[in-house]
Image (tube, rainbow, N blue to C red; front, side, top):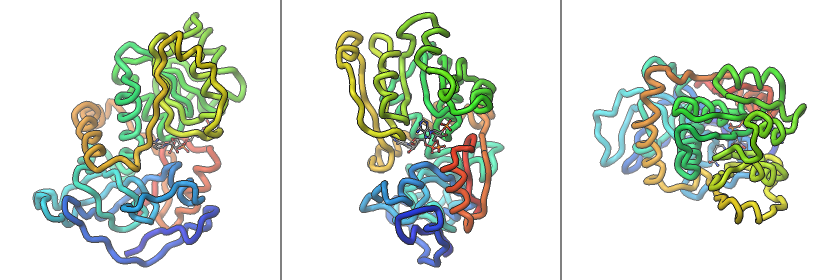
Length: 326
Ligand SMILES: NC(=O)c1ccc[n+]([C@@H]2O[C@H](COP(=O)([O-])OP(=O)(O)OC[C@H]3O[C@@H](n4cnc5c(N)ncnc54)[C@H](OP(=O)(O)O)[C@@H]3O)[C@@H](O)[C@H]2O)c1
């Protein structure tokens, strides 16, 4: 089959088309003929050599796809053959075929194209596990999510609004902030122009207005995020684009009984990923099937132009998902 591999760690030009063996579905797996694959920031980190591939995962990049099941492994019902699905992959998504644990596969939502569906799994699994699992966001509570136009950001805003929360977000331009407001954000702060802490306090007229922070920025953002949290607020780290070190005043944690937590999706067991998939299917899929939540596709590229897709992501000009068509 045709696939994209990282020939050696480095820039986007290191993504090259290769001919490689078509995977076979193992026990509990399905084989998907890929129609489209989502591009995610962790793929960029993997390409740079900064995201080690877990030992049991495909060395090829690609964490999510949409396509058709064409074969099943032992223990998986043959009734799945022919179904259109989207799937969270343990790597290997930038390819014509990928083998995935059946528990990580979900039906393509009604009315969503393959391109639209390919952009679902990585961000929805991440948001569900972190905002609702670790962060325990409830109806009526306030969520702060940075990077409002990122793949993760657009998903977090849409899901949190659909579940009745109030959403504050940050983004790097006036246009991006306007997009976030159109997607339902109650407050969108251009962090290059304004201090998001001051703006959030002003908006809610209180010093500690936020219940949950979903943070991908890290570094000096963490003490600023914590300063906004209410009593029993939860701070969930999913990445640290500005670095993994910071200085904290632990008195905030102690006085307001804050919870600092975080997680990463990829090393979780197949069972944990299947549990997240079940939660999504029950609670979030009805919102996708009715298009209560709409997809946000920034751009599409042919599979062989994966390097261009990575350049677009690294430019941070994109709004929503970047997708490869296979
Ligand atoms: N823990 C997990 O399980 C997990 C899973 C998936 C993704 N992630 C992480 O979540 C993040 C978002 O992923 P994605 O695929 O949605 O990526 P993405 O679409 O590229 O989003 C990254 C966003 O971060 C903002 N940004 C970039 N550098 C920044 C900086 N130095 N300071 C502040 N903001 C900055 C950019 O928006 P502006 O231009 O508006 O600044 C950009 O839109 C990534 O860091 C990724 O590694 C974690």
